[in-house]
Image (cartoon, rainbow, N blue to C red; front, side, top):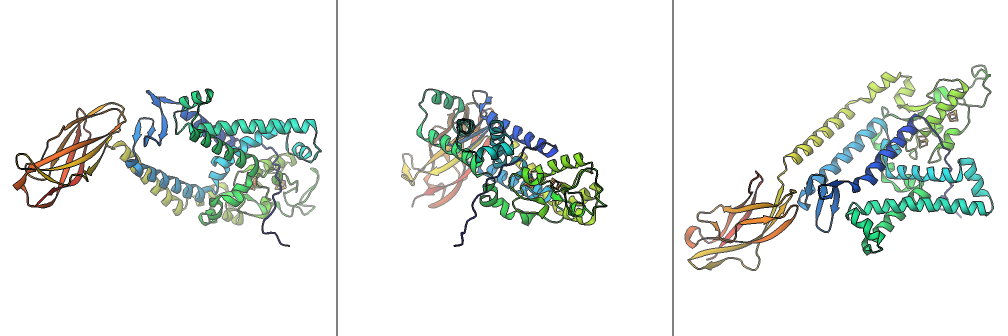
Length: 456
Ligand code: SF4
Ligand code: SF4
């Protein structure tokens, strides 16, 4: 019988230290400082970063965004996609190896596992040992710590959508809403499962980026590479042996590069899609090279061209800065600049005009034609504002309802607006008009189009 699925072989990555490991931990601290810390920051009277889906308002420090500002989210997504293209063209799976949540949380969970159960060999021994009190205590304690981290991660995630101070009080008083409880458990469970159990399986089988990233690589992309020209033929030897006399390359075949790999692959077999570019194998191999007294860099960030043509580091870097990278950089820079300028020039007032469907057009006292509209005024500033509503586009057109409207800070308000015009000022039919909404005491001004109907 042929199985369509490969059974999972549990991977026990050996702990490692070195330059790339330090970088990875640096990113773990940085990303988690931002993720766990941001919801607790205050901005005036409110949470600095809050995505209030119920009120349809996003608060990002001084910015108050409405659903009408969706274009900025689109801009952010385009910037993220282009950044991935750029970083991948320069240095392969930098995102995967250093900043992807899957890598970051797996690193944290592995660290806890290492602290509780020991390094690779101790963990393998513990898993192979029969059940004992020590095994139960260690396993239980590890899962308890994992659950704490996962729960806190789920709580923080929900804290981006519900004010986190209130959420904390609700949690302490056991009166959290059912949706909040659901999302804390859901996100916490996803973290627990992905970082504690699925780990490299997510990168190998679930992540779409792993599938298409090879389309963004070329022979001048920096990737974690084994220098087979220098390393082969591999073989064990003592420190005193002369590898030339033994016809051996620099690889001592210690297999440590395989033991530290979080996806369990052997980088000496060449570039494989499972490699997340974390550099752990480069770090451990440098340690081995130091021990045996050989030059570092048997496994290193290099390009296929550099390895084949034996380029120096500066030659390699010169080729990395190729036209494709420069084009990505220019486009990315232009979009970032455009987004920043657009945010800086953004009018902190949004207006929606809706014709009142119940009242098409009518003749009122004094021989005036009247149309009724509903205006939604969205104040995107941190202070209450008064807005004056005027209308133009036809002669004699005036707003006859209340035309000075007050809207509280960061609030939106629907107002009914009656517009009148002398009956004979325009022929029967539909006429384009414009509403002008101007903030009092500030230059914010918005113009919105609509139509004015004149009945026969
Ligand atoms: S760590 Fe280096 S020396 Fe050891 S097997 Fe891997 S490539 Fe060879
Ligand atoms: S092969 Fe090296 S760089 Fe790639 S995932 Fe394994 S340890 Fe990380």
